[in-house]
Image 1: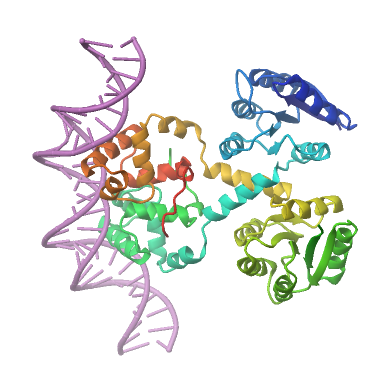
Image 2: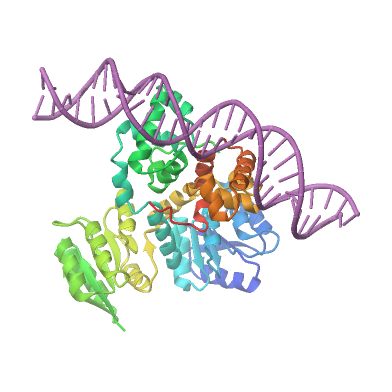
Length: 225
Length: 225
DNA sequence: ATCGATCTCCCCCAAAAGGAGGAGATGCGT
DNA sequence: ACGCATCTCCTCCTTTTGGGGGAGATCGAT
């Protein structure tokens, strides 16, 4: 079964270059090319490709916005690899949030581009090595040094942890009381003791702590925003 | 300049296999092999390799713990690629937190293993495609749906955004005032208008909002925990 | 020149939060 | 049986927060 690919770049020459690299493989077919974001959306709609190689800087509609719209329409059917010359964090994060499955730089060796397409078509994802490094760095710091923070966390009693989690969802003492089926006074004392155990001043700092410690990732409830 | 590599795995046969694949390249030298975490730490200390291929499941000291200790000692000098048969989230996250630069599965094609070593030695990082996908997924949900939230965010004036960021670090109105060189009364009015624009009730919810919207990742300051 | 937005700061007031300290009930391990 | 931790709730008090509403200064656009 052949992989159906769409190549999007505002420079026809670049577009053709990538297309030729891909077509050189027997089982990859470039079913369309597009030069703007709007054309890309059109192409995605009419051709329903497996993979789209998408440049970012383009007239009319940039590649990130186009990616978001295409994925909103196609769901899981089509996957997008962002292919660009630059890699500022700003772009990368927007791309990943838009749902891109890959983010590679244009200086990638042809063979790697081909395998990137295969990997992504196969349900995987792949980022340029330098980007992967940054993403890992970000992830690691977000997930916290673990040590000190987690240490303080387990000084809390079970109930206090529950209260902290509720607190971290932005609930007031009264709301926490209702959520946990206890009195408002009780919530106040839990909050007080949890603040003092964690050496925090107020609930706002407790929310910060909850996020920094990764506590919010456990059981994750929709904050309703 | 040749790349100096250490291969760590409790199964001698597997170890030898990887070593042979790497040595087949002219510019890669396997300077040591280790069968346990403790041996790995020793080998890292005495050989100071560029890259260590590390299995996770090992007697005495597992690969994740060994990785953490080696990186704590060597700083940036040595980089670690985790090479394992399984990829449960638990392992992946611990590995990344321990500071690993790569996480690949043992079913990786030999050619890819070689390029993984090169990429990592070169300062990049690389994860198995399926893991990259999960990491992206995690990142994207953490960074929030973006749409609605970002929309509300740009209803704020510049100053209000600054106040929100300060707020999201757990500062009190008074502290924000000092941080921004303005009066406490001014902070109060900024906070009030920002809460009403974002349709939030209190500063705790504002902190939640800041984290969910990804605002805290811009300019990222150490919360001091 | 005037309007609108923003930033700055003020007053007054009510609600919420946080600290100190106490106290009854439960359950758990020794 | 006893101590210990936890969970529950209380009172009294102070500080912080948030809302309403107003006002002067600056600045850019019309």
